[in-house]
Length: 183
Image: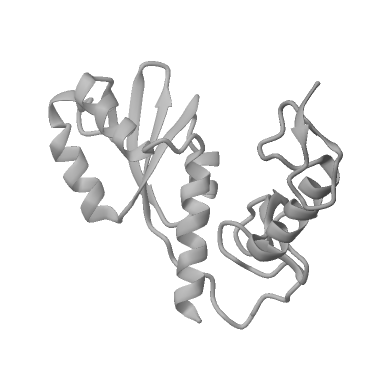
């Protein structure tokens, strides 16, 4: 079903009823291609980013950029640079308990910890971990890093997540930012 004719002078082709602008399919396509050249097109990278591991990219006429760390797809990495250290405080759930720990290598660390779910990351080191242990001391199980779930702890974790559904996306961003600071 169409509503009107295309607004491009000389074009009398009908506009699709659900078209966002009064342009025919051909002129909408031309506009989308122009916008893609100017703004890039968000899409899945051909292969995961070698720098941060993200699959989300922006396709430009000149090539792909990682949407997380802006690494140009296909460019070699500077292997002479040591990997940056990104310390995080992690929050994992096992059954009805939550562990608050820290690591500079969270993938390796979390493989060694029995858990049901990674809840959140917070950028910080042992001093921040100690502050969180004190903050939630009333929920702490003995002298361990495990805590009973509570409304306060759940609220804190929800605030850390801040709408991010996968904590690894935050870690990838922090890692890519650290790489960028290295030069």
